[in-house]
Image (cartoon, rainbow, N blue to C red; front, side, top):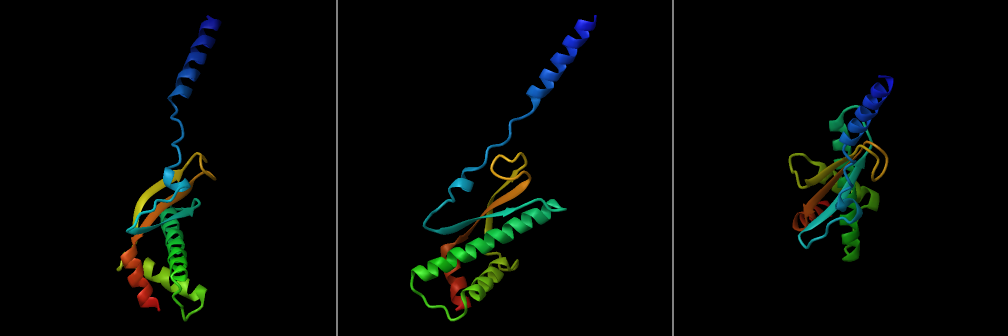
Length: 143
C-alpha cells in the first residue's frame, strides 16, 4: 500500500509538471527591428512597476525617445543643420511624439518576458513605429 501511495504521488507530480507551458520565445523584432520604406521603428523596454499599465507606459515613452534619436540621426545623415543643441532637439521631438492629442506613434507589438527568456524577468517590451512622412513634418516643426 505504501508503494502504491508513493507511485500515485510520483505520477501526480510528473503529470502536473508536464502541464506547465514552455516559456514564450522572444519575438523576432527584439533581435531585428523591422525596416520598411514608409516607417521608422523603435523598441522600448521597461522593468516591472507597481502597476502593469505604468510598465507599458514607460516602455512606450522609452521607445519614443529612441525614435527621437533615430530621427535625429536621419537629420544628421542628410546634413541638415539644427540650431538648438542636440539634447534640446531630442527633447522637443520626444515631446511632440508623446503628445497624446497628436498621436503620431503607433504601438505595433507588445511582449512581457515573464520567464527571463530574453533578459531580466518581468520586463515589458514594445515595438512602435511612425510614418516617415510624419517624422519629417515633426522635424519641420522643431527647426
